[in-house]
Image (tube, rainbow, N blue to C red; front, side, top):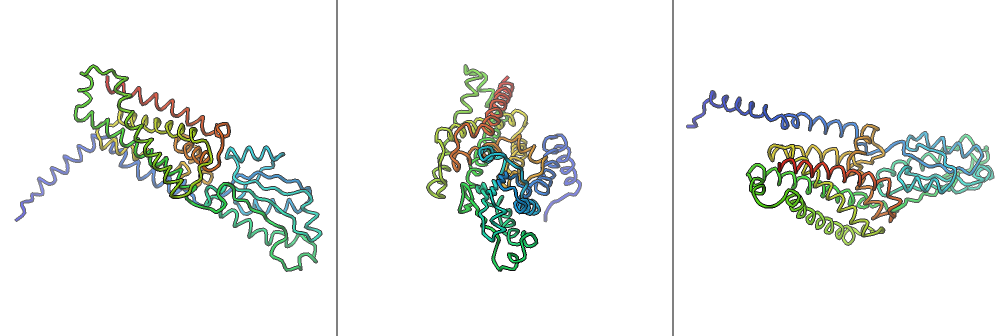
Length: 375
């Protein structure tokens, strides 16, 4: 016979509710975490990227080139901006400000009116094949019918698949291999999860079991404690990065085109940044459960809004603003730029400088918060 008293059970329930009510951080996480996930997944994550920034190089002054531009923009996948020179367009393409470069050659209209098939070049950043796949499919379909009312009657009556030669160059990933896009993001997500969570839980656990007090009564200085705590995790992060890179190059055949030393400098910088975030979380969390909840609350926007799950360019403006404040956004771009594009440091400065600034700021906050914890 089970001895169960409903009054005693109700007393335990009321006691747990009071305990939970005093834990304000956990209560906030209970309400904010599902709400945040719902908003991000419902509004920010968009697999079908639209209005992609496109550099237009139009060397033709005829009407039919304008018809192509209008038809491309009517697909809602291209947001074209006229560039004056090829160098200017290449710089914008390198900096990630445009996803496509569309080049309409001189004499395009005249050749079409003569019944020829002039070439038209579209270059796209294909590292994320999902981001440009629908756009290229839409422009190929539109090219078959966009001139059905603009060409002379004899040319309209000719049965042919299209009126011009559409040349598509999928830059950096011509085969559309999805691992090219996912592996750099996986490196960042693994480092974020491991470094932040391990550091936050380890320091919070020490404070709970009284290990920090043992350090305080020892002759070790505060700076020595901080550096000593961080060093093992830095080594763990480097070890993880090396393992992932070896698997990426030899198992998934991901190219490593850039400078290896620059790559590891970015990795070490990001490791320090993640450790500093973990230290900052541990200074706020009162127990390991709170540290786990706060770490998870950071991971959600970091993974969803960094361009790892869905194309960054397809997210709404408010989501891009949040993503621009997250270190993982710049880390993924730098890893792709170094590994897959072989860019030098000067081409990576628009993403390198924000990551460096975030590292300095967050590291300073983390060290100061840990010193305050020791005090």
